[in-house]
Each structure stands twice: as C-alpha cells, then as structure tokens.
Length: 563
Ligand SMILES: Cc1ncc(C[n+]2csc(CCOP(=O)(O)OP(=O)(O)O)c2C)c(N)n1
Ligand SMILES: [Mg+2]
Image 1 (cartoon, rainbow, N blue to C red):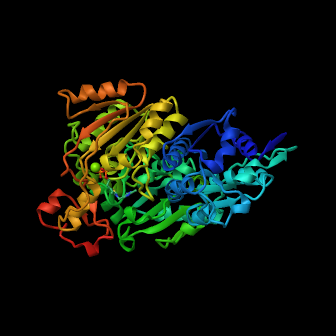
Image 2 (image 1 turned 180 degrees about the horizontal axis):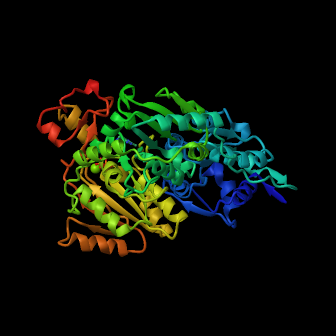
Image 3 (image 1 turned 45 degrees about the vertical axis):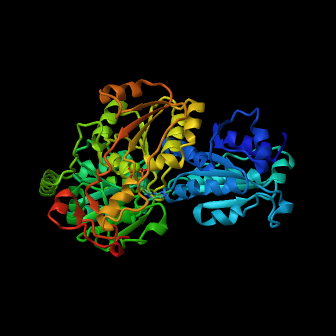
C-alpha cells in the first residue's frame, strides 16, 4: 500500500479498533486531518484540546480500552497536558497524537514549536518523537501495548509535519498492539497471603482503581463472601462492589462515613488491592490502619512500600492474585468481627441531611439515581458535588463512575460524559458538575449538542467554589477569598432550572425524558458542606462533622496544619 505518514497513522489506528478521535486541528496536524478525511474514523471536534483529552478519557474509562485524542503542535499540545497528566495519575490508557513542526525546524523556535516530548516526559508512561514514517509501524502498536499493559497510562506520539507527509510503501502490517498478559501471582506469596487471611480476626479489603483495571470485581466479591470480609473502596474503586452489598462499607478517607474510617482503625489485616494509599484516602498515612498488618497487591512494583510498608507486598495483577488467594483460602464466618462492623455502622452511619429534597445535595443525588437507573454512567467534576455523589450515589457496577481522582481536575466531568456517551451509545450518561467546574470546559456543551451526546448535566449551583469555601470556613478562620462566583448559561441546549419551578420532581423527570443533551440547574445553598471531613494531613479517626463542630471539637485548627 502506498501512503504517507499520516495515512499510516490512520490505518494503524483503524487496525487497533479505534473508531473515534476527538481533537482540534492546526497547521502541524493538517496532513493527519487530510488522512482522516474519507477514513472510517469519526473525528469529534472538541472546542478545546483539554476537552478532547477528557472526551477520550471518558471513552477509555467507560470501556476499559485505550482511546485516542489529537492536537496540533505548540498550544494544541500544551492544552492537552492537563488531560494527559490526569490520565497518568488515574492510570487511564490514553494515546495522544500531536503534530510537531517539521524536523528541520525543530529547535529554531519555529511558529507553534514546543518541546512536547520534553514537556510530557513526567506525565506519561512513555512518549515518542517520531523521526520517520517507517518508525510509525513500530511506534503506534507499541504505544497501545504500553498504554494498556499492566498499570495502564497515557502515551504521547509527537509526529513532525514532514513525517506525516513522508511517502511510504507498506508491504506488511504489524500486529495491533495489545495488553501484555496479566502478571501472575507468585505461588509463595499467595500461600503467605492465605495464611495471613486465615490468622486475621478483623480483616478488611480495600479496593482501588487497580481492581477495575484488572476486571477483578467479581473475584473481590468472591473473596469477601468466602471470608466474611468487609470491603471499603477508594474514590476510584467505587463501583467495584454494588453499593447495596451487605459487606460493602463505601468510600474510605477524607469524606468517608465515620463508621468506615473507624472500622479501618480497628482492623487487624488490611488487604489493599490495586490501591496506592493516596493521602485523600489514608489521611495521615503513618496512622492509617494503625493496628493492621498489610497485604498490598499491585501490578506496579513501585507502589509497594511507597507510602505504607506492607507485611506482604505482592507484585501481580490483582485478578491473578485474587484467583490464587481463593484457591488457598478456606471459607469461614467471622461472627465477632461482623457484629462489631454492624455495630459501628449502626452507630456511625453516613448522615444524609435533606435526602428527600431535590434542591439539597443528597436529595438531588438520590433523585437522579432513581431516574437514571443502574444502567447509567455517572461522571463528576471536582468539588463538594463530587463528594456528595461519591457518598450517596448507589453505584452498582464497575466503570459506572468516572471521576478525576488523582489530579482532581475541575473541568473533567462534561467532556468525560460526552466521551462516555459516544462510546456507549446505549447508555444515558449523567454528569454531576459544580458552577466552578462547569465553567472550566463549558465550551464542550457545543460539542455535546453537535454530537447529539445523550448526556444529562446536573449542575449543583451554589454560586461558590464550594470545596474551597468549605476549607476556608473550617481551616482558614472563615476568611473567604476568591471562592465566590456566579455563572450564566446560553448554549442553545435544553435546560431546566429547579429553582424556577413549582414541581422540581416533575421538571427533573422531564429532563431525563429528553433524548439529546440537557442541563438541569439545582440551586444549592452555599452553606451546605460535605461531612464528615478529615482535615488534610490529619489521621482519619479525627472526623469533623456538624455535631463535632457544635461541640467545639475541631475546625479551629489553623491553616499551617492543613495540607
Ligand atoms: C483545575 C482546578 N483548579 C482548581 C482546583 C481547586 N479546587 C478544588 S474544588 C474547587 C471548587 C470547585 O467548585 P465547584 O465546581 O463549583 O464545585 P463545588 O465545590 O461548589 O460543588 C476548586 C477551585 C481544582 N481542583 N482544579
Ligand atoms: Mg460550586
């Protein structure tokens, strides 16, 4: 086949099974766009490259397969950087293809020249500056293999314009890049883990993003049920277990139910599965699970011992490890521990004030959950609204909940919802957003309308950068600064305002009956806070809630203590 570098990229992407490519064109990527013209690949015209990156992330997170985005050189590449960094921290398989100035001009400060390779080294799993069209035959499949193997992550392929234009004859096509086989669990480790589990009187499983990446949710459930072991999840592990499962304790950490953190405080064995002991989950790491031995399973060896020194660190695919544990573990009940867990849950449940009122945080989350059904995919932005959803939405399955955990990027929710909706046309996608976050990528409403994405945007409008306001209230002596804002809308999108209607339930139901994109504004009082809350850097047992504040127990700490 006679083609050029750009044609080669398109053909190699098609061979990878890629059907959509969000991006924005520019001078240095026009040969690629010329090759896209007439190809089977559907180009999704985002309105900002960060939007394109998050649309691709929405596709990847919803499906578990690698997705692609593209931008031109210079500002196109720098605009992609946040979405790439976000994919790195949350281990999302993303392949970003950027245009670069022609090879002969690299290093001359040419128009729209930026060192994309250098810029993306610390935020990618791997990156390439391609120096010939022929090299693409190796680089493109390899990029997919790396992005999807073991711990997934982003890969950047920077392609100079003249390489895109370089003529090439291809006689033999390379195999598409596929994920490497799952890393096995050493038999000795599995035996030691089973022995630790046998000996444990108060074990807890902690599931993270790695469980979802490994597709190991069912095995987690099997192990939990076999050993009567309660399960907690990190923010990104939500969905690995159905929220209604009796052994499921919900989210751990800064905004966990008090019971969940207290159960971890008491456990004598913590089995961390695909978790990285992030500070939002552990609180003060040295005091996380103070009475517990730790088994830590991760496919990325560098995670073992990074934050918490495990009693047993297992370098393996989580699914492989769980299979091996299950072969060695004898089913048993733990009546004393189960009773203690039940007592703690009964004594310290998650308080959800206003759960019956659709104009209050928990109320709108619950009402949307009821209307959306178990099939829906849920994305969120970053802020109080994200935490209210994480606490109160009854997630039932893996990949139902897409949120920016590690980087915590405001502006993630809307484009990620568009990507999920385009990748899963049969599902409704709900995006919970805040007034601050929505503004960060609001231009993508135009993309949603153009692509007829089946998304429902639920805007929790408290006229504030709420989570910032809450921290200023609790940790900075109520010195509110730069946390107040207000937004207006007008993108020609179906919209309804729950403040302006006498029957908000009916208005919400109408919004869910809309086929195309639709936005629902929910007025939220600025004073609504997310509780409980652990002060950044404090141990998880020190949870602040309204009762504690009234009793004057905490909240008075000064800023220097907050991390
Ligand atoms: C890109 C980016 N900038 C700043 C922050 C810091 N930050 C975290 S939450 C938040 C407020 C978010 O406000 P909003 O979207 O209205 O959500 P709310 O907390 O009010 O629900 C800010 C500014 C961030 N996470 N991401
Ligand atoms: Mg807000």
